[in-house]
Amino acid sequence: MSRHFVPRHCAATLALLLALTPALAFAQSDELARRLIELRGEVEQLNGELELLREEQRTTLAGLSAQRAELSASLERQQLAARELREKRAAAEQAQAETGLEGEALKPLLVAKVAELRARVAEGVPFKIEERLGELDQFVVQIENGTVPPQRAVNRLWAFYEDEFRLTRENSLHRQTITVDGWKMLADVAKLGTVALYFKTSDGQVGQAVRDAGQWRWQRVTEGDDVARIDTLFDALRKQIRQGYFELPLLAIGGDR
Picture (cartoon, one colour):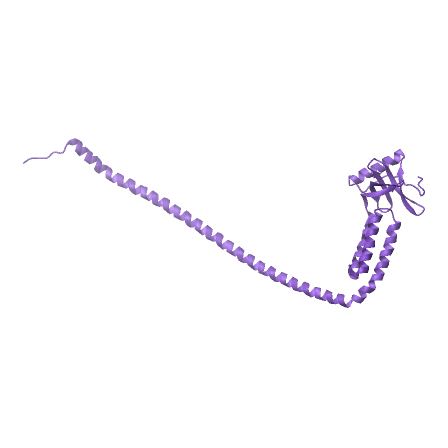
């Protein structure tokens, strides 16, 4: 009877393989477990992101619902306001129709009051006289031809008076055409209320508006100290300094200091 012998090196290899098999199986199991944990983590992260997205959608829908409610309320308010305006317009039209004759009766009174204001402007300091009188003359034409209804003309006439009152309170710098010694020229004009007007031309000449025999005229100032005082006034007004103490020449009637 013959016996089979396994070579020693084969036996050792077989023993090594048998020893490594459990280790390899354990390593593969550990890798699967690690991978499973990673996948579960990814799933949980995706679930969190999905829930966050759902929450954002719910918030957006809630905001849109609130906006829709606000727009609906705003539309109702606008419709109510439009209805009230239509009612007010109808009432105003009715009142206008009822007071039409009274409005016509206002025209002569308005024209007379404009004439009084025009006389005051014409006699006052020569500050943009032509422009101011031109506006009043145009206003009279609008009253007479009905372009401006009498009721509205009353408000506008009061606005003209307010403009004139404001001129008496303001110290300001303007640009206007003046006539000096028969020559028309464009000059800077310093207006101190409606008390005094001083001018300065582009070539440095200065002067003042004086009233002579019931008429206003522009007269040059040539004395050195007075010229310097007027220059100081213009510099201050250009720097927006409208209040303060200024020494200024005041020409007497007839053109003498």
